[in-house]
Image (cartoon, rainbow, N blue to C red):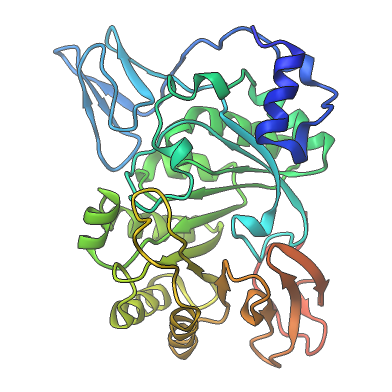
Length: 371
């Protein structure tokens, strides 16, 4: 059982900005949550299970788990092993996702668990995403969807699902987001995009916005660096746009792996032709991490070159991220070119948007500006 003292120690270690002296800590001190039956799967005649949540479509034998390490076949039924068992809860600015055109300057309560359905060799959150639920057991706690929403409401924050891939804790995320929407909270998630269309559409009913990692623009890069596939991610981007949800795209540029300028141009053209020119695109600087510590940080010049290409292709809002103080971490009006959202890294220090329009020239600025 998680005592109040242990819980507060946990919060100081992982979420000091959120929970030091948390008033509702005792309400989260409960016994180990039972596994929750998963959604989106098919029972097979031989006792195996076909998981229909992500692009892998795992066939899971009795007593085994899928590729994500979070979904287990127990006597012919599939269970989530991380429902109600977050390994990370933290209060962040929404800009950290990054999401720049959805209530800028507000906070989000971020939730994450163990594991992922990708195996990115460059993952900055590998200590969560590349671990099993059992490996993270000492750092997890019990928290119901009601608990998470209550914590967000107390802090006047929205809800985000991030750190590891939220698809692998789909049921937990869905129930939190549904309750959050019922309570009028801003609900978003940050995903690798490897989810199937049916569960994605069901989830989007309770989401206002999505940030998608587009890790590169070649199938080889996806297979070699992430042990994944690119086509399902492109399909996810299209579904999000078709469902009318706010979408932003992140492209982490890694030296020697996905920094081919020709491919970056192809990616920008695809975005323009399939998603439109209003979708914000974030080019993010890589720093050595996990199994890619031998590579150098991305040269800032490469990020700026990528941005120039995107702008030339007509994408209106292109950002340079993970470079604190960079000019293009701020938002500029596409018509009068004046700065309309001033940022220093994740902090908003100026906002010249009123009623969804540039205060200087009245140009409509796409995004979600009202709660």
